Length: 602
Image 1 (cartoon, rainbow, N blue to C red):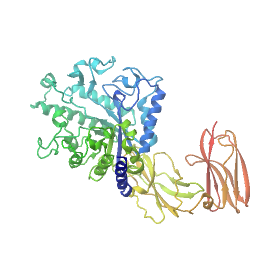
Image 2: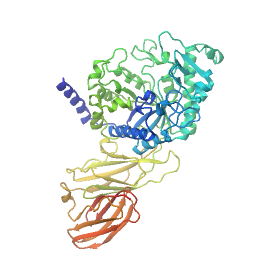
Image 3: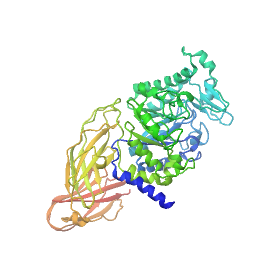
Image 4: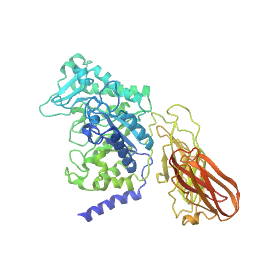
C-alpha cells in the first residue's frame, strides 16, 4: 500500500512539474472562528497568544502559496472587533461581550499582518445566524437577540435574524459597512447560511412577517428568495458607493438546482438544492452582477453520483456570466473515511487540475485552515513544492478597475559576491486608492530565454512593499547571465507595462570565482552596538566605494569613495545613528560589487 501511495503522489507531482501554473489565480483558505475551529485555538488565550497564533497561521499559508484568507469575524451576531452594533465574540475571550485583555483590536491586527505578506483579507460574515442554541447560549446585553427579540426567527433551538424584516436588512448592512468603512479590508465574504437548512420535523414560521411585508409576491418561496436578493443587492450597492475596490463574494452551497427540477438550467445532480432549500438564488446574483465572485462549496469527490465534483465545476463555469468563480474544496475530507476517494492522495491535486483546465474558473479556496496545515496525505507539501510553487497575481476584476498603473523606470541589476542587487525608480501615480501602487512583480530570465512576462515561471518575486530595491540571493551556478524586468501592480492587481530590461553577466562557479577583484570580509563584532571593524582585500588597484545600506537599499553611510592600490584595508565604523536592525555593507570596485550583512542591536 505504501508503494502504491508513493506512485500516486509521483504521478500527481509529474503533472505539476511539466505544466505551467497560472500567472493569475485566487488561492484562498477559510479561517473559521466559530467553535474555535481554526482560530483562536482556545477561548482562553491571552492577546499575545492570539496574535502569535494568527501570525503562525499566516506564515504557514504564505509558505504554501495561499494569497487570500477568508477570516470569520462574525459567527452568531458577535464581533471579532470593537463594534457599536455587536458584542465581542465568546470564541475570542470566553465570554460574549468581554474585550481582549490586554486590549487590542484583533481585526486591525489581522488586516495589518495580511498586508505585510501580500495576502488579501476578506472579512467573513455569517449575516443571519444569531443564537446557535437558545437554551444554552449566554448572551450579552448588547446582542441583537436581547436588543431586538422581535427580529428573531425560531427554528428548533436555533435563532436566526428574520430575512423578511426590512429592519434586519438595514441592521446587517450597517454591520457590514461598519467594518468596511473602519478597516482596510480587501473583501466582504458571506458563507452559505441564509434561511435555515432543512431539519426533519421543523418548519419556518414566518407567516406574520410575510403577511405584513409580502410586497405583492404571492409565492412564499419566491418571497423568501427575494428577501435574500434584497440584502445581497443592498450590500453590493453600499460597498460600491463607499469603497468600490472592496470585493463582495459569497460561498453558496454547491448545488443551485438539479436538472430534474430546473430543466434545462440545473446541474446533473440529485442533492439538496440551495435555490429551494435555503432560498439562495446564487445564479441570479451572478447574472445581475451583484457579487464580484462566488465560491460554491463543492465538498464532494470526483465521481460521486449525487453530486459529482467533475460535473459541478463546469456547470458553475457555464453560469458565472462575467463574474469570478473560485471553487471551494473540502480539505477537511482528505484521508477521511467518508469515501474511498478521499483516501487517494491524487483526489485533491486532480480536482485542482480540473479547476485549472476549466475555462472561466479562476482559483480555489480550501476549507479549513487546520486540516490544510495538517498536511494530510502530503497535500500541503504538494502545494509548496509543485502546485503553488510559483507565486500568482490575483485575477483582474475589470468591472471594478481596468486601468493599469505607470511603469517603474531605470531598472538596474548589479552583481555581488553573494547576491544580485536590483534597483528601480517608482512610477509616478495619482493619490486615489485605485491609483496607488500596491507592489511590484520582478521577472527574471536566464541566458537566452525570451523576455515574456506572461510566463509565470519567470516571476522571481511579487514584492508587496513600498521599496525600490530587491536582493536576489537565489542565483543558479549554471546561469551565464540574467535579464530582469519589473512591473507595478495596483490594489486590484492591474499590472503596468514592464520597465526597461536590466542584464547582468554571471560567472559559473563558487563565490571566489564570481568576485576576483576584491574580497570583502565579515565585520566583527557582529551583531554590534556602537563599534565594528570592516576589512577587505583588493587584488588589484581600483576605484573603491564602501557604503552601508539599510534593508530597503537606502544609503546610510559612505565610508570610502576613492582610488586605492592593491592590498588589505580595514575601517573602524563607529555607529552614531543606526537603529536596531539588519543592514548591508557593500564594496564596489571597477568590475564587481560585494555585499555582507551586519546586525545592529542597541
